[in-house]
Length: 159
Image (cartoon, rainbow, N blue to C red; front, side, top):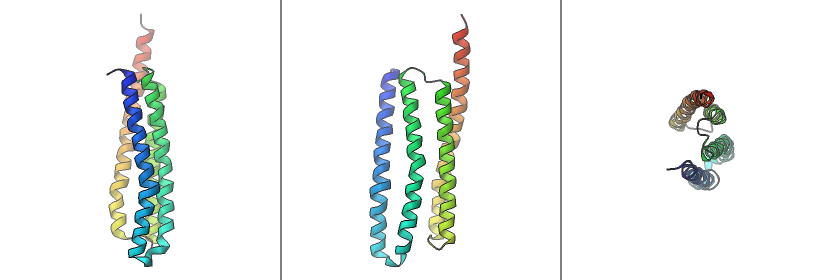
């Protein structure tokens, strides 16, 4: 597989993730929220706060997809191990950690305001753990890509 074909495949995958994310964030979540309101109208005061929390959590995800797209562009140029890619992976790591922290804090605030169920709060800890795991993997990849870029730069200077 060439760098260009790998780059194209990664772009298709990132595009698919973006489309699926848009469907989940902007169609399925509001749809199922309204369905729950029909069954449990006493929770109607929780709909918009929860929707706002979920929509705000989408922003770091799409920014991470943007940085992922930039990485695929660099891979297509045969610059897989570059300082730029290490920087983009570092940003993805920070975004994942920040999004997990935000979601935990917002979830806790909604619990304290009586707009959340303790079971939902506990179940959401798995989502937050997954975000932290993604942050750790992206940070490790950033470190390894940075080291590989330095080795590649040293080898380029060697005759």
